[in-house]
Image (spheres, rainbow, N blue to C red):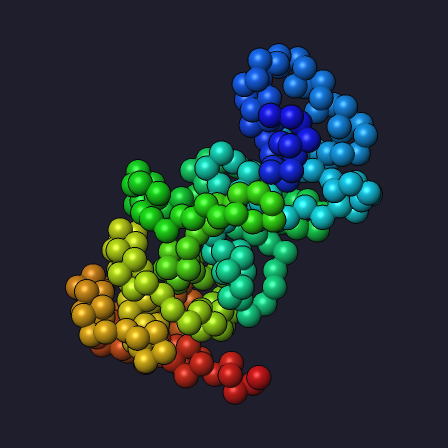
Length: 266
């Protein structure tokens, strides 16, 4: 593959990816590295960080060239998957727009900053780490001229209820999830049970019950989740805020979440 053709289909790429593609045609690693150096010097490429490059469109100042955050997050580790609020934002379902992008990975890496954007790694939950697709709901999608790995809406529904801090707290989480018109509830329940957190399942059950009409939630969906709800009453989160006990979920729900009181202030 010609170098220019590679750039057309790989707006963000890793050094090893490029070398593997370039040497497949019989060229040497030395030649591949020289070509990367040449295009860096000419402004056709920018080095995002060591071993990671972004293509600069023709006629654009390299210092001002936009780099797609979802393509970038998908390349920060070999297994990176855009997740949590960033996944909702990719799907166009967030109440607020962030410049912080969480991604799932099995590797231990540090947060990364690039041109005003923050990329935050989150360790894949232990319960699903050994499962195919980490329990399911990982999409590889065509985006901005390349390929990005993004958590599905079904997986993200469970993930943000499991870790609401990765979605900005309950108001942002609720307002964002309420923008989604449809979930494949079988996929949601399959992933939630694989994740194995009774508290997360109780939050999920409560959310689905609260939105059962708009999301077409059937009794059997809720019954499946109730089997995995906590055996003893649990607070909604670590703040242990007082609220109303939802007995069917053994969940003490704060009034703000129960009544969506943020809507009154809007």
